[in-house]
Structures are given as C-alpha cells and as structure tokens.
Image (cartoon, rainbow, N blue to C red; front, side, top):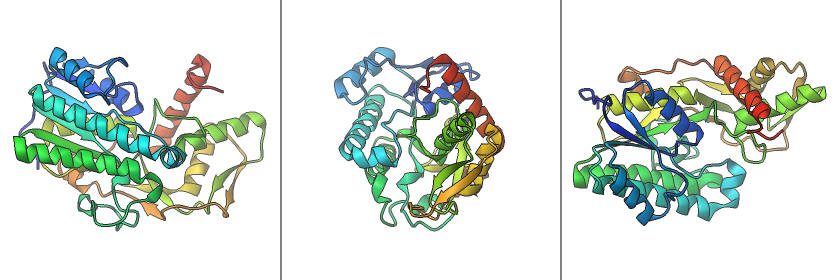
Length: 319
C-alpha cells in the first residue's frame, strides 16, 4: 500500500510511448517535477529485444513509465488479433526486462480496464481480475495487458523490484484518435457532432439504445494519478484509475452536442449492439491513498473539442 514518498526530482524518467495520448500527457505532467524526461525515437522498435536493451544501456533511466502499446477500437482489435497480442507482449516484456538489466529502480506499467471480465460485478474492483471470460472483441489486447500486470508482479516477487501497474478507465483528451474507423466512442461523438453541425443535419446517430453506461477520465487526470502513484505507491496489486462516475451513452451524446454547438437531435439505431450494459471501475484503493480526479466531463469534452479544432486547422487531423 502507501509508502514514504519516492522523489522524482533529479531523476531520469523514461516515458515509453511519449507520442501517444497517454504518454504525451505524462510528459506534460512530469515537466513540473524537476526531473529529466527521456524518450526514444521511432528508430528504437520496442518490439525488438536488442534495440530496447541497447537503448537502456546507453541511456540508463532511473524510472520508467510504460505507456507504449498498440491500441485501437473494437474494429481494429477484431481485425488484427495477432498484432494486438504479439506487439503488446513484446513491448512490455522487452521494456520490463531491459529495465531490470539496467538497474531501473521504479517502473509503472499502464494497462486498460478491458483486462476485467465482460460481466464483472459493478463497480469493478481490482480483485475481479481473472474471475471470468473477457469481452471477445478485445481479448487479444486484454490478455497482453494482463500479462504485463503479472510480469510486474513476478519481477517484484523474484527480483524484489518496485514495479507497479495502473489500470485506467476509458480515456479522452488531447492526442485522442478522431478517425471514425478506429476511434473510441467519445472522440467519435465529437467528430460526428462537429460534422453534423457543419452540414446542417437534423440529427446524429448512435448505435444501440443509448442506455449502456460508461466511465470516462481525462488523460491529464490519468497523468497526474500516474505521477502520484510513482511518488507514493509500492504494492503488488494493480491500481484502478477512474473518475468514479459513469454516464449513459445517450446522455453523453447529448452533452457532446451541447459542447460542440450542434442543435440537432440524437437518434438511436436499436438494431445495433449495445455491448456491456455497464462498465464502471471502483477506484476506492486510489482514493484511499488521497488522489481523485479533478477535471469534470463537460469541461474535459470542451477541451478535447478545442484540441480537435486546432488539429483540423494545423492539418494534423484530416477533415
């Protein structure tokens, strides 16, 4: 559980996956910690053991945040199961073992709430792991992330290393993927509402009944939680990181339309699947340590929409 504070100031902190939504948020958050932030360029393929070991030998970080992963929505997971399993297994195994060999004292591995059984009791506590079948459409990614958690636990037991894991809920914010073919629900809704506003449409459509409930956490809140855990937590259990509240998808669509300024309605295609009725994590363990989220959903969606608009303007997001 909680331990005396670990100091990040003056340390060399490697953020693996610094270009992604999570990694870039962690880099932003670490900027105020008086530490040296290390990143690796694309030439260092984290799936290749030799390249990873060479990088660690040359750079010798004190602390590692493992945010690198092959990620995507249901369609991508279902289409490329081998890549999602193999790539993620290789990334985490190579980075964690190279960290051990290089004498890294602290490592934080980031997983995903999809590690939990499809029908886990709600809200989902950490001990629900491995108590039932996974959601079939993303089990490949989930199995890789479960292996990462277990690898950190095994390294604690066998080598006495202070390697920990955090499991974030559904994330959104700057750096998100707004491509409708591969995005998650919240950025997809932002894009749909924006394009409907521009086209003067009467409504946007969502899949299913709109009743399933989902939890969302701003990526900057996650980054803050990661730094908090690096400073204060030393335990074998992975730690859930969530906002503690959820929202029906239909209500989320209405909120997004309000933020975007789309005045049309929301229609529901009930012939499409709803998915799991509810997915809310229990973040009581993290709350008991003294951390809670600070960015409200409407405020966070407004910031994400602004980032999307700026990306369109810069040309970094395709219209």
